[in-house]
Every structure is written in structure tokens, then in C-alpha cells.
Image (cartoon, rainbow, N blue to C red; front, side, top):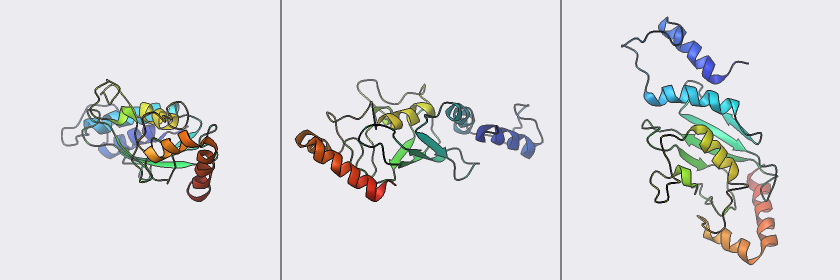
Length: 185
């Protein structure tokens, strides 16, 4: 199976007239970010959760892609939620920028798309934030887990959603399903 990362490596060899992995040409420099992404995208493709689908609008720009998460359990199981992921030039010293493109009623995702996920924090007091040892695979698995294991009503970004769940779990479930029906199909 031809993967995106292997295609890019092959295309790079064609452009430069060198086989992939051959000696470098000083007139053509590839950023550290882009070299890391070739490796990380290949790893991501091999380890993508079954509930996720990654797509690259421009296969020559691995630093910008979309992720669709379709949870198969819990409150959000009948929806598909889309995320936009941009990897800055300073990656892997700084985390990717992630925004939810689907309107959602969720304690850790604002209706405007901001996301509360500790590994996306550049600076974290408790040590759970971004570190250069983290990869795209960690980001994707973290986003996927926001709908199951990491769903956190105790430390919310969307306080209204968390309080709604505390007041009336069944009404919370109904509102989640209403949002899914209108925005996440």
C-alpha cells in the first residue's frame, strides 16, 4: 500500500534526481519540521484509531491536515467531528494548533472550536503539556480520547456544558444528540 509519507519521499527523490535517503543537496533544504512530519505521518497512518480518519488537502503540505473522529461509544457515538490541525514551523518544540470545526456540546471543547487537552498546552505546571518527545500520534489519540477516557467534567473549558451534565445527565445527552443531528452528520 502506498502511503502519503512514502509517496512524498519518492517524489522528493524525483525532484532532486536523488534516491530518497541519498546524500543531501545544500541548495535544497528541508525544515526539521518537515523531516519529522514525514516520519510521524507514516507512524500515524500505521497507528490511526479505527474511529479516526486523517486527510491531507495538499499532499505536499504535511503540516496542515484534517482529522475526522467518529466515536463508537458514549455520548458522542453517532456523530462525526472534524478537526483542523496546523503544525507550526517550530514543531516539535511547540505543539500543533488544533481547532474543532464541528459545533459541539462538550465540556472540553468550546462551541467556537477551542480545545482543552493538556498535551496541546505549550506550558504546563503539572508536566502533562507539550514536550518535544510527543508526536502527531499522541495528538490524534488525545483528540479521539476526548470523546471517551479524557471526557472531563471536573476541569471544563465549556463550563455551561459541564454544569448542564451535573444538573441533568439525560437532558445533557439530549442536547448532545441535538447538536449531533444539526452539526455532526
